[in-house]
Length: 406
Image 1: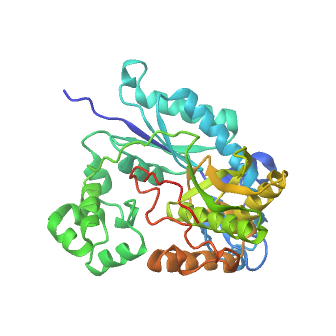
Image 2: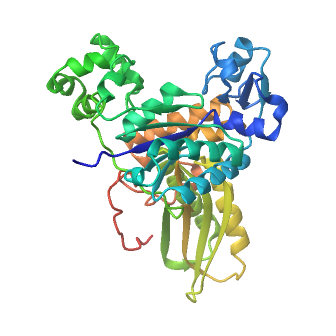
Image 3: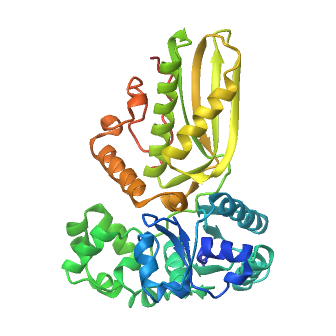
C-alpha cells in the first residue's frame, strides 16, 4: 500500500495579541487590539474577544475603537514578535526533520513515516503542548495528506485547533465550507465565483474542471483540485540564509557621494519592492563596499521583520556611513537582505498610518503594471539600471548576471 502523506500546518493563534499577553498577563481574556495608535493607525491584530464586535485586522483603528470602545489598544513592537517567532521556529526545528516557515507565525512540516515511532496525532499534540509550555504562545494545528487541506483545517478549528482530516475524507470535510476558504481565492476570484452562484466548495466539486478553467484560466484547475483536496504543493524546507541582493560595479571608481547615495537608495528601494511582491519580510540588512585597491568590507545589522522602504532605506544609509571610513575611491557597492520569511506587510502596521499603507499599495500596483522604474524616489533617479525584470520568489532558479556596469 502506498504510504499516505501526513502534512501538519501550525499557526500561532492571534500571534501579536498572544505575545502582548505573554508580556502582561493582566491582558488575558480582555478585548485587545494591536496596531497604530493614532486615529489614522491600522489594526495589525485583534483578540477573539473583539471579533464579535466586527473588529478585524487591516481595519482603520478609528473604526475599531468605535466598534469596541472597551478594548485595550497597544502599539505593537516588531522586535518582540520577531524574537518570539524565532523561539517557536527553534522548537519546531528541534522536533521535526524538515519544515517550512510560511510566515512569521505559520509553519508546515512533513510528518510522514513518524507512525512507526509513536503515532503522528500524538506527536502533533505533544508538539503543540511543548510550544505552549515553553513560549506561552498558543498554536493551532491541522493535519491531513497535504498543505492545502491542513491549512483550511487549522482555520476551521481555531483557536487552539487540533483538527485531523483522515485520508479519504477530504472532500466531505471541504464540501460545506465557503469557497473563499480555499487558499489563493482572493476577493476578485471570490466575486467571480459568487457571480456564477458558487458559494460553497461542494458546488465546485460538482462542476467539470473545464467550466472553472473557462472562467478563471489556469488557476481554475488548481482551485478545482484544491476543492477536491488533491492539490499537493511541496514543503519548501526553511533555511535561515535565504536572501536577495544586488550590487553595482562602477565604470570609473568614484567618490561622488550624491551618486553613491542615489545608487544605494535605488538598490534598497528595488529590493524592498521585490520583498513585498514575493510576500516576504527580511530580518537582516547588509551593505558591502569594495575600494579601488580591491579591499572589500561589509557590515550587517539584525532588524525586526519588515519589507518597508522607510525602515530599510535609513538602515542601508546608516550602514554605509559606518562602513565608509577609508576615504578612498569606491569601485563597488552592494546591498543584501537576508533572514527572509514569508509574510506580508502586516508586521509594519504598528508604526504606520493608513496613508502609508495606501501609498505602498498604490506604488506597488503601478510598478506591477508598468514596471519597477515607472515610479521611484527622486534620490534614486540617476540609478536607472537597478532593478530586476522577474519576481525572485516565483520558484524559478535565480538568473546569474555578470556585474552590470554603470
